[in-house]
Length: 278
View 1 (cartoon, helix red, strand yellow):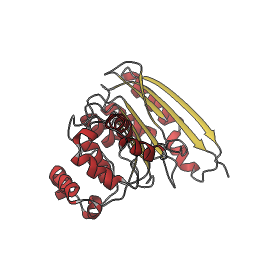
View 2 (view 1 turned 120 degrees about the vertical axis):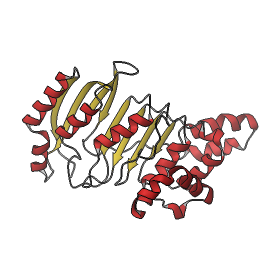
View 3 (view 1 turned 90 degrees about the horizontal axis):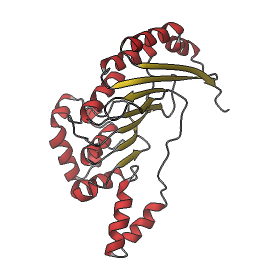
View 4 (view 1 turned 45 degrees about the vertical axis):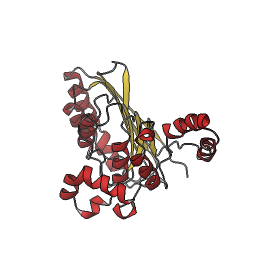
């Protein structure tokens, strides 16, 4: 886990990138949704109260196509969304979307569509990009990404209230462009404060980026960060010991520490290990 503290909002504001063991993503209580939906039909007063609660943190899973259509046609409901949780990759290609949703996607992202290949257009991150483009009051995003990075479709300052982003990634073999993720999130979120990253799902590698790659990404955004904390957790049952050694060797830690000290960034490194349950 690597933790960053940002300067914009407060010197004590913390952030993290986790390359630790799989951590179950906390899901909303699915049993609450039908109950609140029933309340919405009971009376106008209860409708107002229940709707606000229901859309504060909507469930984004198998119902993503319907939710997207609702938020697209009901801007008032989209404005209520402050927390978005996407527990798994939403692999819904254009053929799965309602005509209005497809039109919104094409209109907003035509330039990207023209530049990207068909396989990328149907990748699982596009529903996430559509949702974030609709929820302008979004403050917290917790999502599992596909093999491509998200946020590349977000325009500068398009998410003015988003301050916390927690990303999981299913394709560790393919890797994550850490510097690209930083650049895109910072551009889209002027009040960005916290980035967390954790590996999710099956994986053949322990982590997706080395300590030196982490150093380069932080240096590229030095004005943002005041503190860097790196916690690397080694899986003793992993067969990828060589990969671990390459990514956490003493020389890399020393280079990372020197680079952070030279830029006035407080640095703390911790290494530990655990054994996966059998």
